Each structure stands twice: as C-alpha cells, then as structure tokens.
Image 1 (cartoon, rainbow, N blue to C red):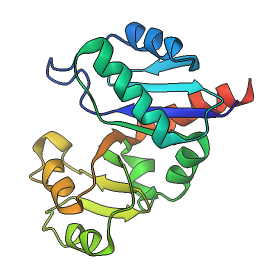
Image 2: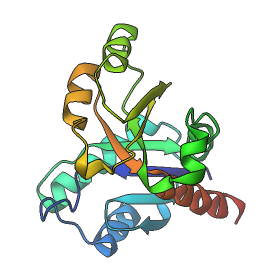
Image 3: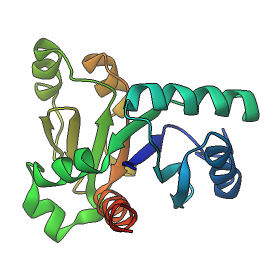
Image 4: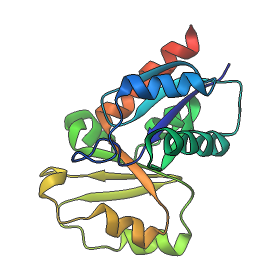
Length: 184
C-alpha cells in the first residue's frame, strides 16, 4: 500500500482550529487510512492507503474534519516520493545544512502560473531568500519567520495558489517517518 503524508493548514495555531493528534489519528482510521502517525501538533499525518489520488484524499480528509470538528482546513497530500523529491530539489542546501529551523518549505496546492511565479520572486524580501521549484516554495528566514516582514499571506495572494509551510526539520522528519512506514 502506498504511503502518503497529509499536511493540514492552520490547525492548532494560536488556539484556533484545535484538533488533538489522537483525535486526528482516530479520524484517519475511520476513513480507512491505515497506520496513521502524527508528528507534532500542527496536523502532519503519515499513513497508508490503497487510494492513489492525492487530491481526492485531501478532499476526503477535509470533508471528514469539517463533519467531525466543524471547520475545514486546507489539506495537502504528498506521496513519499513527492516529499523525497522536494528534499532532493532544495535550491538552498547550504541553508538546510547550517540553519534548518529557519528554512521553510511551503507545499503549494498546485503549480503556480509562470507570471505569478515571476511576481513572487520579484517581491522585495530583505534578508530572506526565496526560491520556487515545482509545487514547493523555499524561504530562508535568517532572522526567523516571526521577525520577517515577508508575509506568507502576501506571497500566497501573489501566487494565487494556497499552501502550507513546514520547516526543514519537520520536512525531513516526515520523510523519515514515511520511509519507515514504506519499508515495513
């Protein structure tokens, strides 16, 4: 059975859209998604399923969360291979090696239009570094994301493509979890 990683957007942030990870694993189990494992409290779930379509899986998960918890988060689903490729194609490998907590990977719901891509790369970002590769946006925040003037909502508005971000440490941890599940 293939292994997938789902990334929930805006879950357990500043006391809003709260879901315990135990309740989330139970929900995935009720959907027939097997061996669900969560990582930290922000809605990262690694699981197996015989289903093959990530976008349909994302819809099913979002529908179930809305039914059970009363809100509908954005849900992005990536295969283990997608995650492996996002790591391999990282255009800022030196940043990942020296300061992984300050490198953010924003997983986008689709490929941004080339014009939107150019506009985002033209945003005055100060000390931040911004790169787009496929459906991933990589941002290095040298002073930390909380101190940055670069706004993710602005970036999404310009890209016209929603996404959800995870720092490099989380991305590599999720891949390790997915590969362990894939090997078992």
